[in-house]
View 1 (spheres, rainbow, N blue to C red):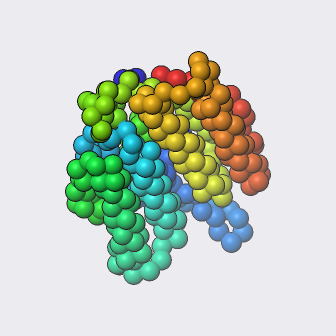
View 2 (view 1 turned 90 degrees about the horizontal axis):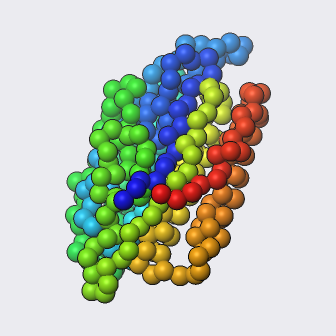
Length: 282
């Protein structure tokens, strides 16, 4: 099945010459400043090293697909949040030698356990065998600058190493469906432009990253809706345009506007991202 596009924005932080990967998947470099506002040297950040989940899942029943996609997105967003925290620590260290374990990796493991439990329950709720995902909760650390592996969306172009989306193409295509009915049709995915950004000021990095995660979540939700349509078609020939692609464009426009405003708010030139709002279908 053709793969959908996912945001693979590259963040280059203002005043830092090296490219910094998207916080969700990479090691961000933050430019700090002294008390007089003069730029200080930046430090490369470590990133969390968590097991990928999508490629460890058995075929996902169509009735559980939306919930599973939502929890995979939650796992990726939590990686993004903790990578952002590690980026701040690279600039302003705090705590003792066990701070990262106690304040970042420990809580991250607990949050992942909860999300993985919800994925297992989603399988069980529709009568499918409950997978055992317990071993995927614990994360470690990558070396500075090494990107985190993430799960991506169902269409899966995230640029992350190892192709974690390898099972996405068939996850809703279990023969006969979970209730033994007709096999679902092929699942299409949305094809959205990747968001390429100019250098992102450090003061805007958190807001920009949050909006990039929002854009990816919107793609996940649209792909989950398309997966359900493959099993239970509805509407006329314009249904996908009117009920999925149209609303997706509206949501993307709002998120892209917030990215532009984040630049403008800290005195940086406002990028023009309007052309990136419209998505098609693979």
